[in-house]
Length: 216
Ligand code: AP5
Image (tube, rainbow, N blue to C red):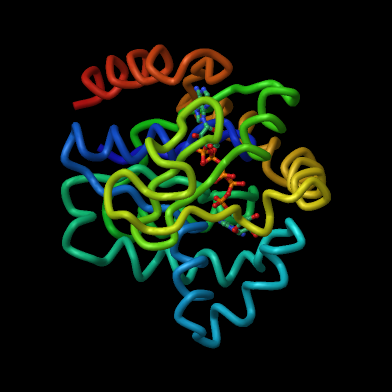
């Protein structure tokens, strides 16, 4: 099963993808998570990516495509995957299509998690993430049992620099300018499915899980 998650920042792509990947035994591949790991490790790639990410802009297409190319070659991608945050532009989608074609395969579905702007802003400004294991929380919707501490590993929870108000607004601008066109692009290829992501997390999950069962 090879699926792409589309949708604005804060729609819940990462939250849903983690649980779906576990339930269906496939890989969750997030370009945002991979870039943040590079930043944490202080690599050259991390240094290059940091200013783009912190300001709410996209890293260059070639950088994102290169990361994905290497990631898809890993063993755990053989069973299938959810691509979360990639592709982000039409050129990235075209390069992905070509890359998969060369590997003798193709995407099964592009799933668009639809969420409205007020919901997105409330979700992003309240999001907290574990510094150690990456688990995603929300100070109101999905709080940790003990404030500021991860339930799973006891790590410290932090706010992503790009979840500050100015960066959120820039990410939404970038999404509308560069990423929203992908919805039409996948629709034209007959690959698009829309899912309501404005609702309770569990209700969106149920819809996604049914869809994944059909794709299996
Ligand atoms: P990335 O990490 O991909 O960020 P994003 O797409 O902006 O998505 P988010 O992680 O912000 O949102 P999400 O939809 O995953 O929401 P989440 O599940 O966390 O990318 C970051 C940056 O990396 C980019 O800006 C760019 O610079 C760079 N980058 C990455 N990929 C790239 C690419 N391909 N090309 C170029 N640059 C790239 O949920 C949000 C919050 O809401 C959480 O607190 C969660 O608990 C809560 N929540 C989720 N669902 C619900 C619900 N149903 N009800 C209530 N609360 C909910």
